[in-house]
Length: 181
Image (cartoon, rainbow, N blue to C red; front, side, top):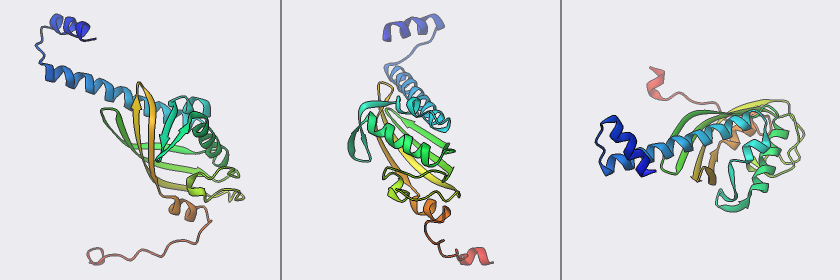
């Protein structure tokens, strides 16, 4: 790769330091990793469970637990069944080396009965409410050779459960002093 890059750089008449070459390689890796995460979410949003699961390594770490691709496939499939219009809109995406962090607005309508303890287990064997939700998630991914090898998520399961009518609504927000003026 370095030899081919040197030829292209020489043809362009540019001088590149080793630091610049390393930055170019890192930027290329980050661009590829961002694309993988975007494609992964596009597959989820299309309801294509197999395509979404194909972005994971055979074995990965999910929220601190080592699991197989088959298990993550079952989780994605359960979400797709429970919330057929499940959507994960990427609001912000940041990549650094082999890590990608995504701030995501997740929405969907509770139309199926969950058979797996996903999303905090709040929906396991719960009759569909027919209600919709929209909450923020933060997902952190680590990739190796274009495959997701680690995933962690911080989700608003409480807000989701409240919006679906499974928990009472939260207390009303009180305006702070600056907003009252």
